[in-house]
Image 1 (spheres, helix red, strand yellow):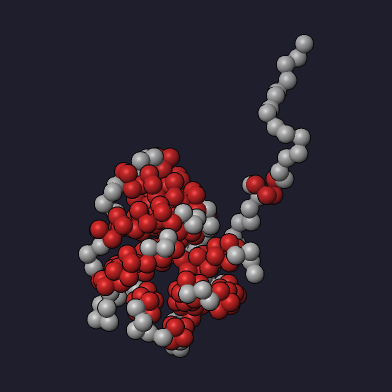
Image 2 (cartoon, one colour):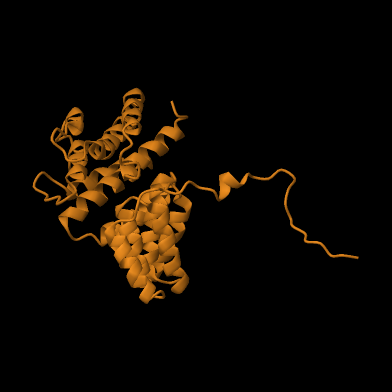
Length: 271
């Protein structure tokens, strides 16, 4: 009597196109990616080269391809903390927040000194609406923050997290770490959000960014801060209108503000 293959599957099963036939981008690889691919041919077991490929693919917003490159690197060294950190970031970009948290948690244990790991871990939990775990990650991140540029970023997201937890007194104390003289470096948008929380910028001023190089990115970043501000103030209609405007301008669909706006919008029933 023949022995046949047996599988533990249900009668009703998912279609292949929902599970593995994800549309592949037609975007040609940049010269930088092609160059690193040649180096990989010569040294295919180099974790650093595979990680570099992932970083270069991310510049093109080819995040799934970047994740594949990072995964190859991790097959060569499963405990490479920096690669786990980068893959976790890109899982956030494609809205796989649980996978992001898993990578970033492991990375934080392998290398607890990496500021970016804790910052992105906090974001992953924030996007999962797991604000208690986001608070723990941001608290650790703040302890490691020693520059003004990084301070404005962590104060912003940490403040929003504490406010979501109803810890207003702690959140208000946090704002003392940033003032009008703080040099934000490239994080001017976050500084403006913090100054609004402090009452030093009027809410409507926050989404005035004429002349910005990437206005859609500014709308995602500063718009989300404003939407959340109105939400915390109980002005739900104003908050929702800004969320809709952010989501209507999806040029930078992987921006943190855009992702947070998307999550909030879905949590509110998409209305």
